[in-house]
Image: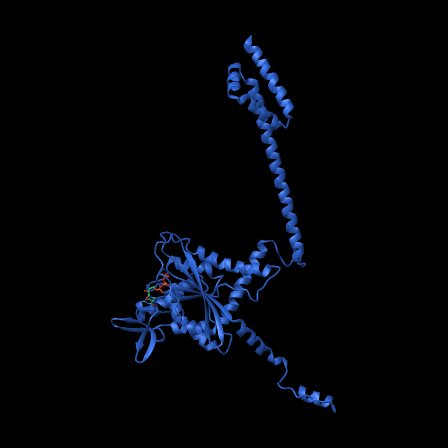
Length: 410
Ligand code: GTP
């Protein structure tokens, strides 16, 4: 015990008892305090066709109204709309960004619908990389906009995935954690739903699409996560409204034939999805960093940066930078020389043409030229193209003109 040691060593001296335990086992507490002070950020991307219930689900998950003006079905291309909110639970602040697709699946040709989404995800990675490479960087206070999870809304058709779903998920599965959800799941019967879920999972496997798997290596959550992995895709129901049931207000959808309670696990999987998102938030954030590392590596390699040379010797960033700069400089020099040569060649061609035209000029044409003043202009052009002096030009002009007039008079 540190306090005893101090007491023994300082025999006869004034001793001060420690007011609290001192040790490096307080590190986790320091980390916790700092994290709570800073707050957490979490970014969710919702992909799904117009009106599938993206905003309603988000509102139900976070018990906040993410109401948004309804999108039209007539947009020429897919767009992404981001909204940020600060939510507080106990003393923990969550900076939540909800990004959703607008106009997804509304175009006649849907082949490129996934492109704006891929671009958006890459743009967030690029922004982070730019911050990381800055001389004066501030990653600690940087507002990280990288997408931590993508909720992919599948239409409750009860049949199978559409081409647009397969294409989009395949192009995103190496960039983001995808959790597939069946939207408006209250419109599908219980038996149909089980069949539909199985069909979706089989199709995802056959098409080689990687979706997010809740981690099973942490024993505190491994059992729950294993069971939940078997529930994928989640059949979700969302609602913006609260209905009075008994003496309680609950989030629900009221129909002429009954009520669907969003919070009731036997009605839908919305609560399961919320539980899984909250308990695995840190894992989702870590996996996002892994996707970012992949993006960063490809991006830096494309720029010519590498850690080792052809014989496995380490290469410093400075060397790579210098080599690239030299390569660029030589390329610019080569281009400049090429442009110069092309220019000289064209000048010579023009001069030859003018010379030929001058030789072929007949008297009437000369007079006509004189009247319109074009002859002078042509002689001037020729001289300036050849880089000759204006005195020479005037002399030539005068001599040619007087010769022609002489002939004409005769
Ligand atoms: P856009 O932004 O316009 O694409 O819409 P969105 O996908 O955000 O859908 P939103 O949450 O605005 O819901 C659209 C309509 O569907 C609203 O009338 C909702 O009440 C309804 N709706 C939302 N969730 C559900 C659901 O789970 N089941 C049913 N049956 N209807 C839902």
